Image (cartoon, rainbow, N blue to C red; front, top):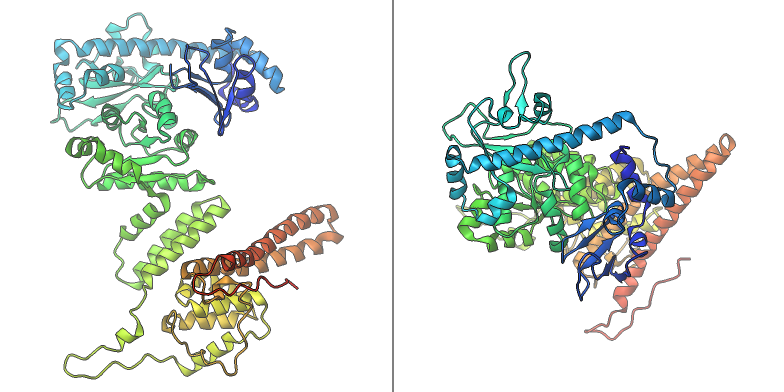
Length: 630
């Protein structure tokens, strides 16, 4: 009976592996995992670990590795189907009825595995023949040791159109074609796909040969690709395969990381230098399926692509593919190699320690995104800078997870604002400007009287609520944050009649306001008192400026979010007459969001109280505490 991979994945997901293992092996909790002395070999200290989240067990002593089904077959000696039936019964799954077509596919794949393994044996033997001298010379030039050559299984495909068919006569030509070893064109005689090339086998996660990568040996041959991979076959799907994964997977569980390099030979060079946790895609950009495979091994896989323009474009293609898939704690890290160097070049020139230093301090995805877009095109004119902002926001829009999208949007807008509107030198320094031909000082910059008047109105709380008044007061205190939140504030201002005019005036005057200096509204007479500082830490003159800016950003977010929440609640309430059940459910959901909103607002006061409660070095006066909400 052949069971679909999807059904088997569902079975594994429903089974708690540690529960299965504990029936015969005593486990001890070790953080998020379980550990024990390995049941597959004798040992005195535990090196056998069970990870329920990832659904596998692994022994760092003997290397045994598997899932719940493998445990039942290897440790308890059950047949595959008996193991599946027992686990399915426990999981409440019904074993599918036999599918003749699935059975036929499984039988076909089993036959193709024999073909690809036979081809690997033949390629390997051909490397040691006189015809393989050129391939051996190339390997010698790479300085790979004997252990690397042996475990990666390098071989040689002879320079002949009908060599492999004659060598593998035990298999039908149709099977050789299906395995990707022969090319059939119309009614012509099939011919060898790999000719006069260095070969290296591609394995599935279980270590079975499923295809080949082959490198050209004639450097003068320009009418053929440098690297050639097997085509997609019933065994090999380039979008679902990572080169060297069957070796790098166990290694990554020890190192806690997984490194992605551009090509198969890069992965070999990394392994030869001691970096066993390196994999490579199959000559294409990383696919969604490959990213999922990587995230099973590490929360932040490290992309380590070549330091040339092509390598950086490859990294950006991977980032673009990953953005819609980002989830909490799942991201990418990026190592940028020196210009013109690939991993092998770096290791040869500067040693493995140079590579280790880079892998230990990779750049974040968001920093790489910013750096790439900032250098992707000239930024001389306002239009150029607007184009940069549009590209950054397009990347944010590609992110599907709402919290991550909001955080990326905020941080990228802050980076853009700092770049497009850099802080000006202090006013005192600007006032010392002298003309070339004389001694006249530049006049102090003055606000338009009308704008200054509107700023006075902005400082007056008027009919605004406490949060809006606090945000406006905070922006007046930290005018450098006005432009950082300009787009968000402008959208809010256009729909809010009470606070909108004040916010629009702040945006208009932002360039003329100086952090920490007197503003046109600094005179005390005639203005409303500032909002309650004990509730909003960013208004406290003794607060750390960076902490205050972060609190102000949270307050801006709350201010903008509140109207949409209130409007949605009003709509849900209005639906009670026509759709009471749906309206009630929607109202309850929105009320939970409102409670979360109020909690976030309360946390601002809690943070203020926590900071105030810290011992004061310069003053023994105690903080009066947080006033009652009422």
